[in-house]
Image (cartoon, rainbow over all chains, first blue to last red; front, side):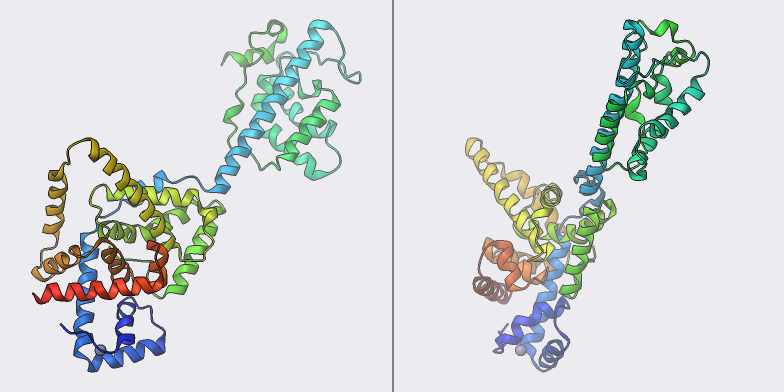
Length: 222
Length: 187
Ligand SMILES: [Zn+2]
């Protein structure tokens, strides 16, 4: 098998079989090959080698490979965000209950004179929804973008709010505390939380205040 | 397996860049598409580089490493060339650790021979078998360069990037390989 003396054309032969030539160069190579036995033989050889190399490579299980890949960056960020929001909500809920507890057990009024909220017996649901509505109404500034995260959190975790409200609504937090927490949530540039599962808090179930919590306390037994 | 990513160079590269951007924006399906486009080529390159064991694992590791360091991919070379570079580095690491292990224990040539025969039987045609042996007789560098040029259609520049050499050296390796293959077939 001889080498064609036209080195430039020979160099293009692999590109010809891979369709990587510009139109004019492709036409020139094809014209040359039509008249050149050496190049035709080499072309045939290249096709044969290519076929061998393709045949002998094992098949790769695409799904197996994909399963091992890291999550897309935006997905990762979202996941992190969800957890940070969940953490903030946890803090909010636990904090709210604790303040309520503190109010109840010590009789001390926290913050700027907001009185401790009396337990509403047998009204867990209205209480929960009022907690959801109360947060933006009481605390959020007129700015809608700031108010939204609180609403999102509150509505997505309405049941959680009910769970942690044996006499302790979010309103039990003083204004400063709530503003600080909402500020934190705002900094997270919250997206709506679609997975509220991290917020199953049962903090006050066994607290001393639980027995007189009435309807709110019953929710803990589930 | 067909090779969806090959064709006229530019648009493939652009498509890869688009898929990478989509993945970075959170589209997990873009990752699947990227794997589909390049997995077969990586498997071929692994085999051409003389790797016979756990090629699928090597390909997987290559993608995992690539996706973990996608921020380092600037698009100066094609995505596929970049993948070859990563795969080759992993392959060298693997060989180094295998060599260390072999230095401690006896060489188990039997296993390698078995897999080799299995591959051999896949190439049923006599001409193909002869071509296969011709390629196998090339030096490791010649074989790498030759297969990247013939099976993948890479330019000498891309080959130089993938195997860490110069464009001129890649061209010389290719033509020496071609000459050697022809001589073997003429014997
Ligand atoms: Zn010619």
